[in-house]
Length: 393
Ligand code: SF4
Ligand code: SF4
Image (cartoon, rainbow, N blue to C red; front, side):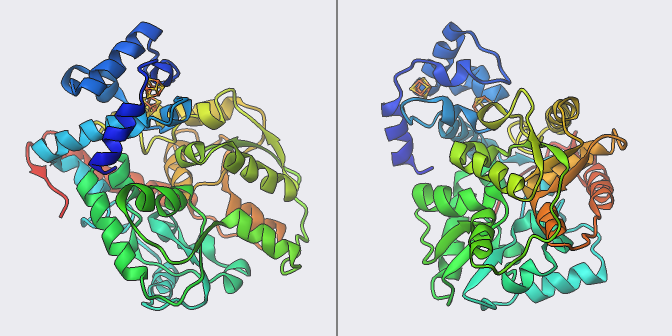
C-alpha cells in the first residue's frame, strides 16, 4: 500500500460504483456508491460512509472490473486517521507484538509451550517447512501428527505476517513487517514455505512483496497444494474415507485469492470424502468471521454482530458440520459458537485431513474460545472509555 500504488489505483478508477453497490454490508444504491467513490477519490474521506462503515471484508476488490483496489483506498483513509489520532487503548489487546495480546497470552499447556519452543529455532529444520502464523501458534496442537513429521513447523510470534495491521490500514507497521521478514528470511536455507492460513499465504505471496517491497527467496505454497503433491507421490494414504456433509465457510483472504483458490479448497475436502454444501452467501459474497469487521472502528460490537451473523448463516445451511480452511476463522467463529453450543461443529481442513489419515485429533476449540473471550473481556472491554491513544512501535 505504498503511495505510488494508491495514485495508480485512483487513476485506474472509472467511478462506476460497481465495487460499493455490491458491498453486502452497506447496501448502497448505484447513485450512493458512485457518490461515495467520488468522495474517496477526492480525499473527502471524513464525510464518506464507506470509509466510516467498511467492515474490511476485502470483497470490493473482487467486484472492481478495473483492478482499481477500492479496498486499499478505503484503508488509506484509515491510515491517515491512525497517523493523526493513533489507536484507542481497546485496540491494544488485538495488536500482534503488544503484550498482552489475544493470541500470544492465552494460557498454553506444557505440551503447547513445548511445541512453540521446538518451532522457534533460528534456522529451518528442513528445506520445506510450514509457516504457523499467529492463529496456528494459538492452536499448536492442530499441527501435530504424521503430516508435520514430513512438513516440520517453523515459526514464532515475532515473525507475524502483519495481517492485523494490514486489515486496520496501518501502512507503516505493515512496511516494518515487510522489512523485518525480508531481513530474517534473506539467508535462510529453505526452498519452500507452506501456509495453512490464507491470510498468511496472501500476505507473503501478494501483499508484502507487491505493495510493500518484501523479498522472499523461496517458493510459497498453500497447504492443500503441498498435500495433494505428496498424495500423488504416494507419501500419505487416506485410509479413512470421510463421509460427513459439511457447509464451507470462506475466508476474506480466500475471496481475494480468487475462485480457483476457493474451489481448490472444496475439491480438496471432496477428495477426503466430504459432501459439500453452500450457504447463499459464499465465495466472493461470503461473510467475514467477524475479526476483520472489528478492524475499522476497533469495535467489539461490530465483531460480535457480523461474526454471529456469519455463524448463523452457516447454521441455517445444509450440512452437519462447518468446514473452515482458515485458522483465524476457526478461532473467531468458535467464540460465537459458545452462544450456540449445540450448533454445528466447526472443523478445520487440517483436522479433516488428519482424520482421513486415521489420526485421532485432539480438539481444544471450546477451551480456546472461552480463554480468548475471557481475555478480551479482561483486557479490552475495560478500555472502552479510556481516552488514551497508542501508536505501534
Ligand atoms: S471491504 Fe467489504 S465492507 Fe468494505 S467497502 Fe469493500 S465490500 Fe464493503
Ligand atoms: S474502484 Fe473499480 S468498481 Fe469501484 S468505482 Fe472505481 S472502477 Fe468502479
